[in-house]
Length: 273
Image 1: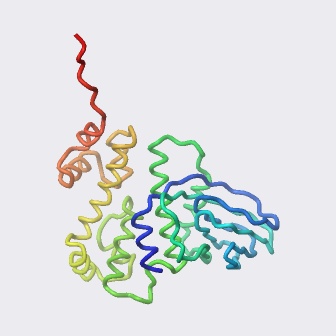
Image 2: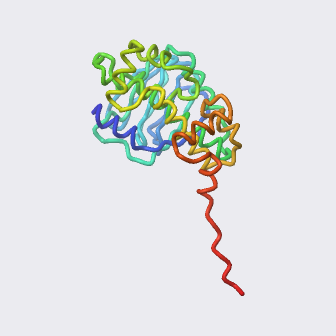
């Protein structure tokens, strides 16, 4: 199951569809949504049952995640208020995995703040903003799966798992990471040990991986938005546009402007005389 989930997260492409906040007064009959549904129970408690018969009791501040297309209901013991986030995926959810998962009240206030922030976003966004929100939604999904204890379980703290956790941490927090020791601290391993294990596993340093992730995000923005280089540099965690251009050229062999220009379809030659 762990392998199926990891493979799914590595290959699927996630999109932020919508988020909203609403009252949860009592019983909500069986219903379904095509995308992932993340329900953050801001106020109130109760239980939910899905079509497979799995029942989850949730408390205030808890989060329930439903796989795409899963039929479920909701019965509030204590009425309250919910935040719902819909996240689309281009691949079907593996059948062998649980159709619904529970995340106890998150300890990190940042995770709660992100749920609230996504719920307040408009339904129609500019392409660049949509792309940024897609990345945020994917990061949120991964963090919630970690919190649900179904991704990279901590009781198997092997070097390989520390390295995988560091890789995933960088994917989620690439914009805000300042140095490698910060990553080591976040995953609970020594700085020198992480550097050694990471290079052995991936053939590159942690810093090189961090740069590669940021460059990949930058390429997405260059190809799918009209944002200026300064804005892209900021969104991808680079100090300034000049340093961003230097790193981009070192990794890809071309300038950011050249990357964007190469993606623009060339007009066919005029053959009229």
